[in-house]
Image (cartoon, rainbow, N blue to C red; front, side, top):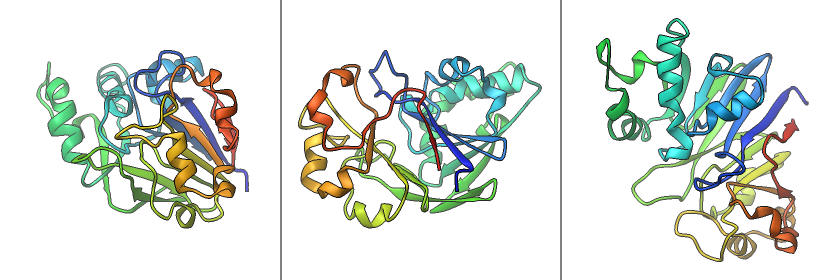
Length: 245
């Protein structure tokens, strides 16, 4: 079981300048699924000699700029530069109205063709608690992140769990079960953040054996200086790092 390639094209937080936005590229059977599409996504893909048309599908975990602002560029370029190439866009049902009506519509609602809708740029697939892609069955799970803003992690059972943005998650050990890799949001610059799990909060909430399985993502520019503060965890994901599962 190593036919799925995971690569974080970025692993930094929204303010990070050195590590790009935390967006995950999943490759299987020659196809590519991008989990979240922040404002650094195009540049991050370019660094890997990839462009927007090399992405076959996108899954959006929630509406924040470092997770969705890249969709404007993908949508416009694929429609007007790449012959109306439409990427399949998986969006949780509760996230969809926030994504278009409150985020993308302001910049994409009108173009030289007149009034637009999200479906003019993407092949939109509304999902609830699961979706299938390239023979892989992904599970979604709600995450505690920002009040009034639904957010969902993604899991490929027995292979990986990625929380995307999240505070600590109740009964997280049962959720991840025997997954090979666990990627967890981590606020590394202090002991409290209202929307992101801190290292200390994870130590308090998760038992030590679970901590040792957790790879940290969505960190700040100073992550390399944290040293011993990360010893309880599996490590921090390097930008561009590849995992096979």
